[in-house]
Length: 575
Image 1 (spheres, helix red, strand yellow):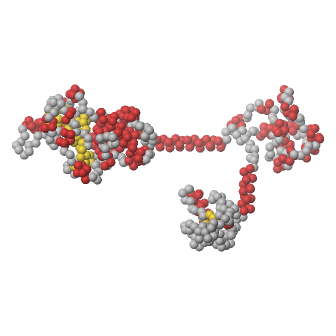
Image 2 (cartoon, rainbow, N blue to C red; image 1 turned 135 degrees about the vertical axis):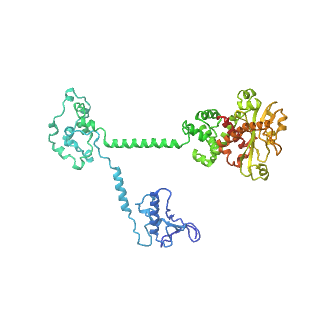
Image 3 (cartoon, one colour; image 1 turned 120 degrees about the vertical axis):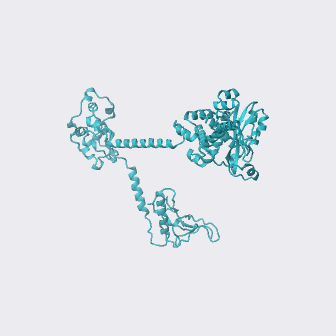
């Protein structure tokens, strides 16, 4: 049968008849309360007790605490008000069903008792507060007794007394309004009432109108307030020393101590949080911290880099990260090869935000730091030529060339796998041509090529030969077979001489080979510095960094290698 059915024993209430037509009988149906466990312990205990109470009232053997059919309902006939009460009103009669349950195990709740409880609570809330004596300035006993009004003024008349008609004698004795408004003479102001005035007997009419003892705590009437006003002489008396010392109550002192402790704790927690938060105070001017997280030698150099990059960092795209955080995040990624997930945790942003921030800042750093990797003029080169090169080859050595490889993940494309597999490393790599000056500064870095590409091909296609002038000398390893290519530029390549199993080398060749090997080692040292300083080049690079950037003919890995070389040039040279 469609519709809702009441699950209470011997109750046949349904929302539809047997023909499926809805019954407009005014009966409502309610689900059994659920056990709420995700809103605190108090809510969990309360809803658990209510569900148990409902199951005990329904008393169905097929119902358990964990299993109640979804179609089962309880109709409004089992509640006094026709519906369940709010779940937080545990004393309400309709907190559980109690009417027409089909058994006597659960007593019917008493509505009148609940109404009396509500009435008492309402009266307690509506009762006006009693006048509280000022505890901060207690008066001495003698002064307090003198300042008390007479007994007849301490008693407040009942509300009915204001509505009773006055006798003619009382009307004649009542002061006129002018008496309260006319000014007092100086003699009257200086005169204080004598104690006998407070002790004069009351008239019979006043004695009949005196309030009952239970009205002693009520406030006096306006006329009585006028009579209780102290004289000016009493107002001008200075407070006694005990009253001045007790102006501050002990409760205020206790609250002040609690507030002070809370402020100190809050200040300590903020300071501790700032120590772990990566913001402008993270590096704190410590050169060792700067060197560990960024690879730069000191904090001053990092500040210089930040100042030059800040105008080009878009704040509209990266609102959650400051320029300091953008630069530091990128350098930490290059320096420590931290994963995106860890960086998102450290900077308290989403992983997508970290990835976008890294690529955006990397592009800015590539555009601004790329000029640091440049080919110097001949005058500058000859002026700072190390004496080791001058003694061996004169002033004609302009470059030392070599190639290094960066490990990458295995590509999914077969052609890409064939192009990037390196026979030398027996792994999938990207190869780069690096050129350094005799001073140890990187002066040229090529784009990335597959690991299978030969050194000769990279040298001829990278644009390095265009930088040579007639008479230049290039130092290279014996694997660089570029004599013909360099010779076309009227330059010369110096490589270690190999005997190839023939007679021993001549003395001249031995000395030249030893000099070439001794000087060419600098390029290997520079490559080692770049790899060790920026561990992202020492690890396996993900494939998504090999995709060309939008609108550019460069991969993200090309930008990473160039930025790492530029940052290395900002550090101290190895030569």
